[in-house]
Length: 143
Image 1 (tube, one colour):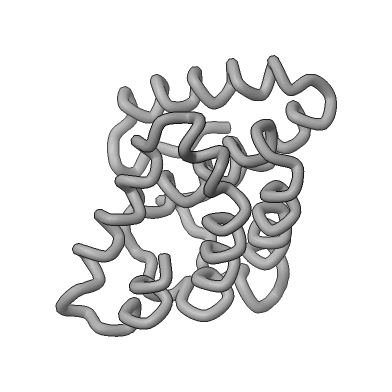
Image 2 (spheres, one colour; image 1 turned 30 degrees about the vertical axis):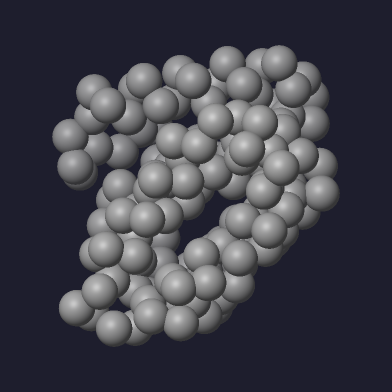
């Protein structure tokens, strides 16, 4: 995440950096949980500074799915994750929400609501959303 913060504006390495971020979603749950606080704060900082450099649908999916997972996994990591969503929905970040990432933003918000109401439901939604994302085309948007 630190490399992404420093090098996100450099177009020649941006794709490789985002691939590294996508790899975070493959970490075992216990490792992800132990790093959730740091990852969540790092991603919040990345979005605030360089959201315009995150362009690929899969990059948004990875970042937002991490936030959704943090909501039910680690309460201290859910606050920066929620701040990130708040940033994206407010004036300064609103330009970053488009047809390629709107459905992921929506799924993440619903995941936060579910985690507040019932953490077990939130984990089921994360799994279902991941399975559904594999069946959608690049421009698909859910209602």
